[in-house]
Image 1 (cartoon, rainbow, N blue to C red):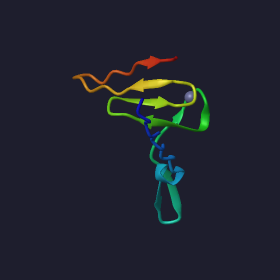
Image 2 (cartoon, helix red, strand yellow; image 1 turned 90 degrees about the horizontal axis):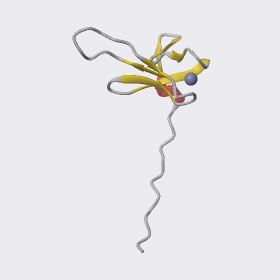
Image 3 (cartoon, rainbow, N blue to C red; image 1 turned 180 degrees about the vertical axis):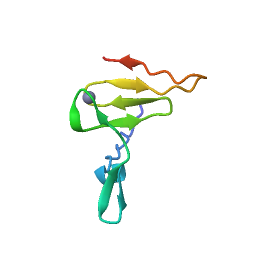
Image 4 (cartoon, helix red, strand yellow; image 1 turned 90 degrees about the vertical axis):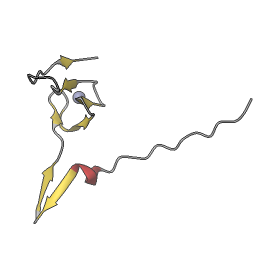
Length: 72
Ligand SMILES: [Zn+2]
């Protein structure tokens, strides 16, 4: 059996979620509405997901922008 190297997971940099303009920090992502401030929704190509509780919002890519909420 060949040994498989474990891929090291790159840790997400919190600073990448903020953009600094002047002396103000703007949040790029939204907070989770279930977990509250401090828990960002991760951006995927078609949805926003909270890694903490599994809450996800689908971003409408169809003709009309639909928003579905699915909770794990
Ligand atoms: Zn959450």
